Amino acid sequence: MSLLKRVSDLLRWQYKNPSFKLPWKLHSFPVFSGSSPLYHTISEPEPLTVVEEQELDKAHERIKSICIRCQESNVPLLIDAEDTILQPAIDYMAYWSAIMFNSDKSRPIVYNTIQAYLKDAGERLHLALRESEKMKVPIGFKLVRGAYMSSEVKLAASLGYKSPVHDTIQETHACYNECMGFLMEKASNGTGIAVILATHNTDSGKLGARKASELGIDKENGKIEFAQLYGMSDALSLGLKRAGFNVSKYMPYGPVETAVPYLIRRAYENRGMMSTGALDRQLMRMELKRRIMAR
Image (cartoon, rainbow, N blue to C red; front, side, top):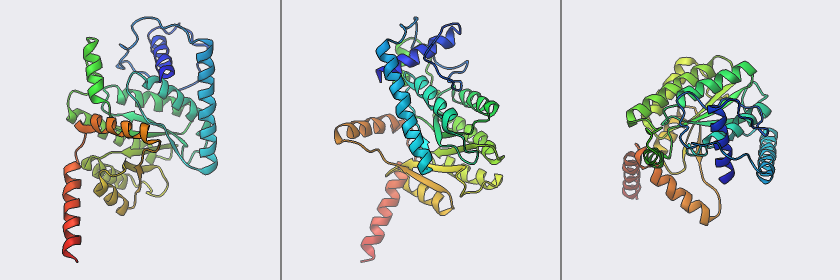
């Protein structure tokens, strides 16, 4: 995490000062737009130390080995998002990986994540996509709303800046749906664009399914998929699957001492974004009652 923060600080400073040199930087797509939050880095950061550059090289090699294995197995690699403190470094690494390994025009291997609750999400998406088209590099995006709303608002306020997060949930929904429509239209025109719509919002799920039908997108070619967290929005997942779409369930995996705190944090941060929890509970009660009465 500390290395990601250091790299993010240096990338932010270079964006503010284009003449600032980063000798370790590899070719990537844009990770900032004119409205991106830059308040995390208020003074020129120290260059990476020799040890830090070695650690960054190791990180590149680890990602390369994962991408190679994914290519061999024909399994997409979905790179998740973090908060805005760390996200520039993640975007940089994700887009570098895409340039290196997304050679198949039919479907990309590397997917980066766009968080629609951020005010700069649409601009950054368009900039990255424009660069990928210029370079003729296929690119995949996982579109989410976002999971760090409380901490993002608190950090910006503590530094005296406006929140990077949309002011209302309706604005976040609108941004998500606009990005979704834009990506689906791109995916439908035969380019190497693919999108995974990660949403627990029933309205967005229905809108995505309807849009795919209107655009005539083949449900089996992997250009459009849906995803939800394991154990959440199962009714939405089942409905989309029955409609013929590929649906993934995201399941955290790891040691208990790290996985449980992670899940607690995700649940806490997602509490303002949940829209289907009540429906899921209602459907579970109905199913439980049905099974009891059937005995």
